[in-house]
Length: 297
Image (cartoon, rainbow, N blue to C red; front, top):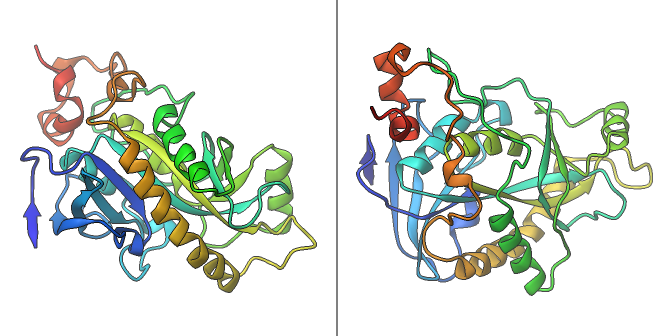
């Protein structure tokens, strides 16, 4: 197993962030396992890097193989930073979610494009003497999200091209009162991970899209079975084959390199407000992969 302690040139162009089995896609070749150490600690698991549809792709199991980590225990900063170390410019995130709308059914796919974040976890790389304020009005990459949506529709799957994802801390699911309130706020799906990843990907100047696999109606829906791990796992395993097919089709349709038209690769331009001469050397080194090009004399 290869170990990388610092960036040594790109290993992959596209990142897939999700469940353990996602790297078991037909047609994935030349697979190798890479364990990274980042300035923010260890990622959730080793990365699996290979070739899919002619593209170099890196896979990471968000909760670790065997699903060992709670949503609040995931080292999101290390995960996203690790993708950046590998040279990834686009990340497709796969998440399981509950539905807060009657017309978003279990086993549908939702390409959420807005977030409501109710978590209390670290969701920025900045601090330690370096302040930056990213724009987050459009939280996902519209071009990457459209590519994933088109891939799902092309496979004949039920998919929704947008929606608001409310992110809760977990690990408990919502109470019925909470679920009803989230629904009244206009949220479409509920999960525990994607909002944190989206913020960090924006800071890392990585295109981000989230493919949300609906496993259940949240507890607001009185006529449906109550949310349970058993129900979620049944629908999740049904969805995983679809997710692999969508990923394969979407990757095949993506052009080389990170696109310039979406602006994700320039997300930090004009966002750093700290005077360069006041940034501590340790912080400069820690965030050099992200901000080095903006701190040149």
